Length: 180
Image (cartoon, rainbow, N blue to C red; front, top):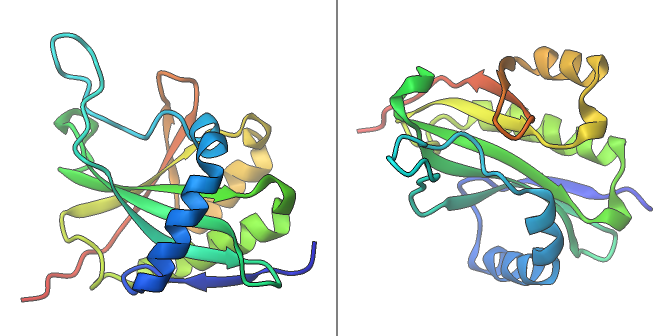
């Protein structure tokens, strides 16, 4: 696959991009649902033990496009309310990335992740001020190795532990900016 173009779009997505993303999600929904099940740290404090979630606010952050301009990858964040037992504040951004299977490569994933972290950390004015952490869940079993752990640490993440589904959960502190 030819080199893809990677662009940071958090906080500045246009109506045209949202149309393209809608088409992308519809086309790849089945694959995405199968691969990104779980949804991060959620409040399990209800008496029935079921996961409670507010309406997800999925916000595009990084887009990868192939040579023809089609979206082949997206990194996005979900703004989520956390339960108090995690000691991570009231809200956090949950980071997710999805790349179309035919375009997946370690090089593209690395470019998207690096672009995301560099630009997202710098975008404090565009982020919700209630969020003190970015949380990432490593759901790919092939990526549970020392190289990937060192990569996350190099990016500034620290491991929180393993969740109920057996996935590694990582967090990155965010500096917040209040704009009045």
